[in-house]
Image (cartoon, rainbow, N blue to C red):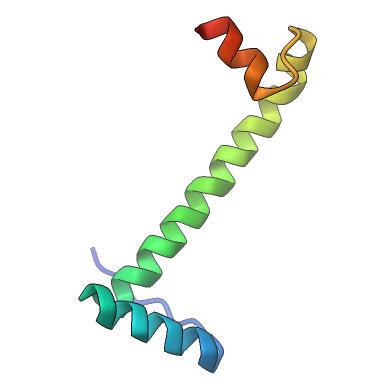
Length: 72
């Protein structure tokens, strides 16, 4: 079911959203929905990553390169 959410933004952000919507021929709502979704996914990813970092470090993984070396 569709819901309406009201948010306050400054004039500059509103202008950028409007210009982007026009440029890519999408709705302003689509831009805001996509931006919110990307933000939430990134935060969820960071939460998961932060949860597993101590376990990875115990196993000897300190960088992404350490992981890539093991799985490659």
